[in-house]
Image (cartoon, rainbow, N blue to C red; front, side, top):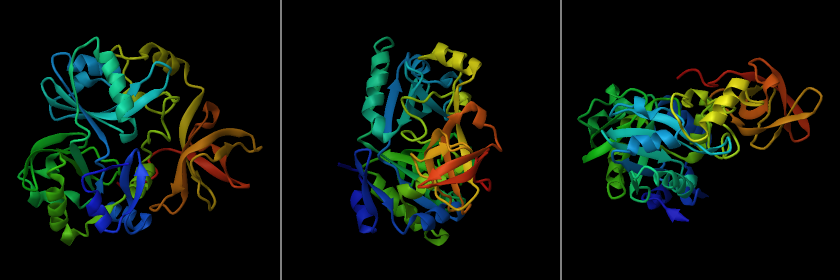
Length: 362
C-alpha cells in the first residue's frame, strides 16, 4: 500500500484508514452520516490525493485527447474543465476523467486512482501516432476537495482570487493558503458546491492546516471516502468500477451527453450505431418504496421474481432517509415511474425508477 502525503495527519485525527486503489485512505472520521451532513450544510475537506494526473503538452496534445476521449475537447478555452471518458475498442469504458485546458497546447487529465497504470498505457499506445509529450504527475501532486455551501466564504481569506467567480467546471491558477500557482477548480463530486485544490505534495500540509484555520468558524471538518460515496450517489454521479467499467458503454450508462460524434475517437462508429439503435439496457436510478438498503450486487427483479439486472451502487440516503441506488435493467424497465423490485436478502422490496438527481436541494 502507498501512503498519500497527509497519511499521518489523517491517522492523528483518528481517521479509519482502509486500502483503496493501492493507497491507504481515510474512509471515515466521525461517521458517514455526520460527515455527509457537514458537506450538505457547512463545509468539509476530502483528501483525494490518490487520484491520477497526466500532463499532455505539445502541438498534437489536442489531437491525441480528441482521439482517446469521447467528449469534444476542442471546445475548451484556457480555464475550462470537461468531464469525459476513454472509450475502449469493445463498447466499454477504460475510465472516466476530467480534462483541464491549462495553456494553449497543454492539458491536465485527472483520472481514477485504480486506473492510473491502465490509463497511462492506453494513452501511450495511441500517442505513438501523435507524439505529444506525456508526463505522469500522480506521485508528485496532492488534491484536496473543499466542499459545501459555506466553502467559498470560509476559504476566501486564503486567496487573492475571487473564489465565488469560479463557475462550475471552470478553474483558475493562483495563490492559495500562501502557496503560489495552485489550481483552484470547481468540478465538485458532491452537489453541494465548493472547489478543489491541486498542489505539490510538499505544499499540501501547509494548505491543509491553513484551510482548517480559516474554516474553524464555519464548522469545517475532515471528510472520508465513505461520505464522498453517499454524496455522489445522491447526485447520481457514476463511480468507475461500480456503475461504469470496461464492459459498460457510455450510451447505456446515460453518458451520451459526453459522447460527441462530431469527431473521430476510439470506437466512435460502434457507439454511434448503438445510440441510433438504442441500447438493450440502461443505467437507471431507483428509490425503494419500503424500508431497506440496496447494496452493490443485489439482484433487480420484475414483479414475477425474474432477475432483470443488478444494483451497481446503493445506500441508505442520509439526506432523503430512504434506500436509493443505480443499476442496469432492460430498456423496457428504464422509464421514470416504472416499478421494479430489489432483492434484499430473501425479500423483494418494491422500488420506483426515478429521474436524477436524487438530492434536489443543491
